[in-house]
Image (tube, rainbow, N blue to C red; front, side, top):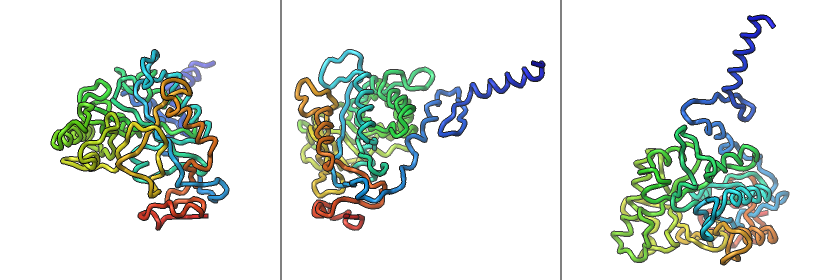
Length: 341
């Protein structure tokens, strides 16, 4: 090899070593800790073209699992903990069974845009624990955290969207004010919601205190990220304030959905049964253990066994497809979008 040719090869090697191919296009790696942005197309890729509803047995009035996580830790201490292996195994199952994550904000707003024949699932994380998300010195998610696991999973599972909603308190992820973490999550396609300032039992608070718990945490999120627009709350302990309506509207905040601790799938937001003040969630859990009958493994089994009860998309977010026999279940405000078959 001539010296000139050797120099050319060296230059080409350096160029390719600093480039990642994403969706068939070269993506230059950066030195500011933003390499994960290479996977943004996985979150924003357009779903497949709409199908004939009958061909995919579309039922957009069906039930939707909203899964609830707390800590992702190597050694579990309670039924609220999952190991990284547990979490990845659950993602494997969801992907294998055709579930596609959507945010709590999009779910409660009825913006459910998933491929034809697939089923929406909402992944929610409470308490802003560092095991869910933390940034290393290089600006990347720490390995083993829930966010890092989701991003890694998405690289090898093209249908999966690394989308989740994080319900935070005053010191999210051990990051004062969420100054680093909240902007990163929002910039990378995740959703951030309200879990009150101090994880308060709102039923024990007077009206002024309950509104302050919610309103001050809302303000914290907005201070951390000017682009933030929190639209949902996960009620600590699943307990409402008094009156209940303060969960969704009070001094300094206005929300479209309040999530409970719950024990069963949610109704579709397009049905008359959907109650934005009382959206149930399912604790992520294996098929055994305390109250496992209310956990995710058992409920996913039930939904698989009764497939017609699940929300199944027709692939077109502008219409609501379902079997004609279910027309009476549609909420009045969505009747102009119905597509019975």
